[in-house]
Amino acid sequence: MFLFHWPILFLALPLPWLLRALLPAAHSRNAGCLYAPFAIQLTATSGHGHQRLLQWRWWILLLIWLLLIVTAARPQWLGEPIRVQESGRSLMLAIDASGSMATTDLDPAKKELSRLEVVKQLAGDFIARRYGDRIGLILFGSNAYLQAPLTFDRSTVKTLLEQTMVGVAGRETAIGNALGLAIKRLRNAPKGKGVLILMTDGANTAGIVSPRRAAEFAASQGLRVYTIGVGAAAVSMSSLPSTPVINPAADLDETLLQYIAEKTGGRYFRATDKEQLRQIYRLLDKLEPVVGGADIVRPVTELYPWPLGLALLFSFALSARPLRG
Image (cartoon, rainbow, N blue to C red; front, side):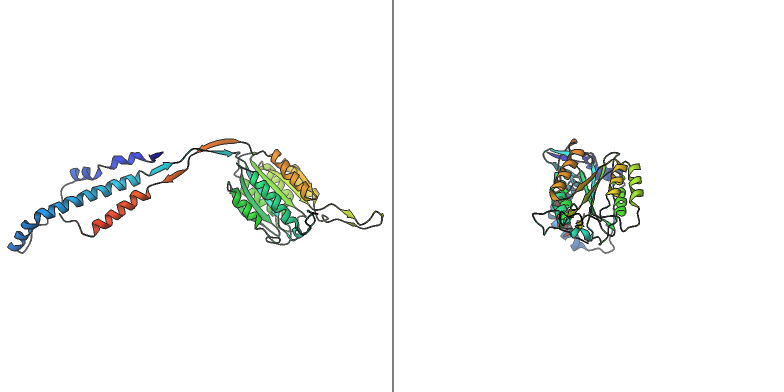
């Protein structure tokens, strides 16, 4: 469908004629100081051709003016209607990228995969399913950094997550700073529509923001925080009572993660392997469903560069030989 965004501007089409009729005529400057009879005779013999050239130039000026009016009216082509599903939810993911995320204990089938690699796979699938949500990404280690602001471009957020490396944000864990940064980015979300999913394998060992104070502030802003603690379960070396126990998730502060989730109306999840983490993301899909309202949009293609370009070309042609009356 073709249309003009501002068709009212066509009312300016007769403006040059109105100005010519309303404004006083310019004073004649034809009086010369040198009498040259041969010049008068030359003008008389070439007057007919000059008048025809003058007439064509006025038509070009009229065409340029018309093209400029068409440009100002902003011609557009509207494409076919597209149904866009929107839940209105703003969902931020805060992913721990500290040094401990290099541990390889979540996927027994592929022991070479680190915790971060497993999280990248499953969180990437989760992002791809969140059609209609605005998604953002925060990476935290010794400090917290915004990797992707809230956006409907899920593929870009997923790509940025896939490019994440262990230690990119530092070797320690600043849970409080991650919470604070997420609150800052979600504070303009409609009440009840701001959601943070925070995943870590450790305790708060860095940063200047208290995680508990940040959780209290998040609750006052109406933000829900779901926390996920990752790390394999404790394993005994043998069945003997005195055998030492190996706990890969010894540094995980579950008490803090439970407090953050309960304070903000979210839930705490514990993932000891890849399959459990997969189920957690599936459960989050149910707790925060993507189905919401829908909107109808039509893609718009701007066409004004075409008449504007033609007007410019005709102007160049006209300026090659100045108009003389």
